[in-house]
Length: 566
Image 1 (cartoon, rainbow, N blue to C red):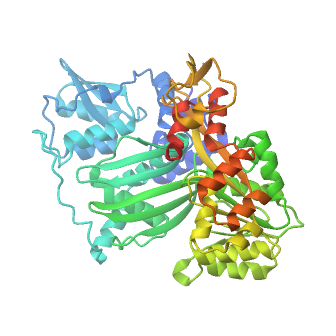
Image 2 (spheres, rainbow, N blue to C red):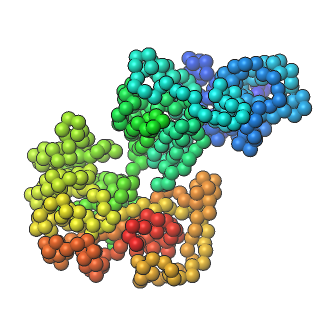
C-alpha cells in the first residue's frame, strides 16, 4: 500500500517549488521551528494566493473570505489575552453556528491548537482556510488591547515618535526583529513585486498606517497593517538599509540589495518625518529588467531612426525631457546600451545610479561631500571620455559645463524637467547658457510620457464617433480616423485595472539650421515648437493618438499624461 503524499511532496509534484527549494525550506524549518507554509511564503517561493488552493485540495478544507464578514465579537467567553494566542496560532473565530465554532486558519498542518480552543469554549471547532493577512487584521480589530467595542478607535499615545534615546532605540530594534514584523515587511515587498509595483508608499496617519503600491504610474491602496506596527515596520526597513533608526527628525536615504520571489532586486529607501511618524517610499528596481532596447519602448519607427542617428554623432548634446517618472533615465540607458562598444569610453554621473550598466563607468553624486553634478562633470571631462551622461541638468553651472563638453568633442546625454521638447531649449537659455553656444552644441531634444498599456486579455472594442469636442491637437490630427477604438475593462490578469504595463509616447525636435537661427534670436518655446512642427515634428499627442488607433492605449490615458499641453 502506497504511503499518502505529504504536503511538501505535493508542492513539488505541482511544480510550485523545486526539490532544491524544498530542501532549503526544510532545513530552515528545522533551525527556526517555523511552519512550512509560513516559510515558503516568507522566502518568496509562493504567494499566499498560490498556496491556498493547494491547502484546500490537500486538506479538503473550504476557503473563506473574511472581508465579507462583519467585524463584531462573537457571543462566546474567551480568556483574557486570547489575542496573543490567536496571533501565534494564526487563527481566529469567525462564526458561531449553534454549538459549532467556525475558525479561520492559515496553517492546517498544525491543528493541535484547535483542540485547545474547543476545550476553552466547550464548542465543537470546525476549521476553514483564510488568508493570513485577513486573519491577522481581524485579530487586531477584535482582540487588540486598543479595540473599543463602541467604535471609538482613537489612537493610543505611542512614545516612539520622538528623538530616540538608548532605551527607545533598543526597543525599536527588538520590535523590528520580531518574526511578525519581518514577515509583514517581506510579504509587503514580495506582493509589490508580484503586482509589478515600481514604488511602495508607507504613510503614517493618526489612526492608520496606509500602504500604497504605484502600479503603471497610478497609486493603489492595499489592506493596511495594524497601526501599532508602524514604528516597527519603519525601523525594520531602516535597519535593512543601514540607516540611523534613532534619527527620526531628518530625511534619510539608503539602499538594499536583496532577493525577493527568486529575483534579484535593488530597493531604494527614502524616509521623511511627518506629523504622525516617518513616511517611507521604497523604489523597487529589478536587476536585469530595465528596458535596454530602444525598439521595445514604443518609439515610432521614423522617430527611432532619427533618434538613433543623433546618438551616434561623435559630439554634441542630446536631451530627454519630461516630468518625474516619465522614463527619461530608462531611455538614456537604452541609448547608452545602443552605442556601447569597446571602442568608446562612457562615463555617467547620476543621482542615484539606478541600474548598473556593463562596460560603463557610473558615478553616484554625493552633495554632502561636495560631489555635485557640476563638480563631478568637471572631473569627468578630464577622464578622456567619448560619451558622458549627466543624470539631470539642475543648475546653470551644470548646464554650462555640459554645453562646453559637447563643444569640445564629447557626446553628452542629459535630462531636463520640461513639458515639451521646445521648452527644454527655453529653459537652458533662461539658465544663462549663451544662445550661440547652445545652437552650436545641441543636436536634438526628445520629450516623452508614459501611458498605461491596455490589457490584451480584456480590452474591448467600442465605436468611435469622431473628433468632435476633443482637444485641438487631436482634432487637427491628419491621420486616418478609425471606426473603433479600445477601452479598458479589467480582469484577473491586470488585477481589475484594465491596463497591463506602460509604453512611451514621444516627440523629437531635431535642431536644424533654421532652429539654430531662432535660438540665436532667443525665440520663445512657442515659436520654436511651431517651426519644428512646420518642419515635420509630430507632437506628443500625435504619437499618443497613433497608439490609441492601434489599440495600444486609451484616449483617456493620452489626455491624462498630456494635460499640460492643452
